[in-house]
Image (cartoon, rainbow, N blue to C red; front, side, top):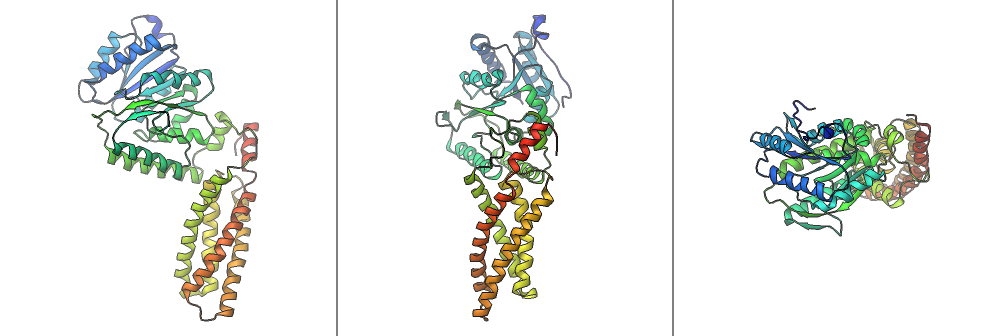
Length: 418
């Protein structure tokens, strides 16, 4: 929310009436030294090389030095430059405040250090103006990108994006490059759902956009690291991991209205009812399976002395079967919300019944042929039986969730909600 705002527009009154095609936001906090050179360079580039009408918005994030005075001077000096002041820090807050109220067709932002080569700005904006894409991001991790930065930042960046791909199934390559744009109509729909107001803002916006089927255009960039960067890497990493956990939990529990958004502004699959890729499903199913198997074995060992082998097997398998179905429903097969949840769990329990029959039968055969078998030997037999059960569970769950894609397509076609 903007607490106070100061707008310095061009001397030409028409600039205050005619909306620009692009609104480029430059978030700043205590940048009194670099702000002037940055804005003048960006302004000169837009006037000389950019085919679309553009405005520069300096978003002052509660600076405590003379940044605001410098920004107001630039707004008075240069046409098409304005200033917005916020009383609270946070890049995400600044972008939300400007983007949601902008009258431009496309809103963008870039870091004040201009680490990204400005020649990438037109490739970033053009697909959005044409309507081909919904969001656009600069990527430093493409093979054709040219990047100059230290090994530490390189490893942190690649590690963070690997975590995103593993935990949130993100397919975009570079979440934190300070060079992004989005169609304004899309931004207005997504922004109310983005909770973070700091550095995780970018990631949260991109994950949400990707999940509802929006097209994210990636532009390889030339990028030179700013040696004077004041980002607290440890604090930022801690907050990012907390954000990943929060968004992952919201996606898993259905708190985010993915189906409704997909029906409203998302892009549906070209062919309805086609399931998610087999390889991706296997990887995610394997992750869930390892976790549930470890939980199953731990429960069995804990319960076996009190209940005996068969009862311990039944209880451990029942508990982990419910967790397994819920996790695979959301994580592996991408089914969100409560629609058909009871039916899915019932069918999951039928698959559980097969697993119970197989594991209980294995235990019965073991004790029949080797009555004095120790717990560790019981675990070996159960692990083998569970491997077979897991294979059958994957096949069974693919059948249970076979209509997930078609359900999303039906939702989009009717324009309704579930």
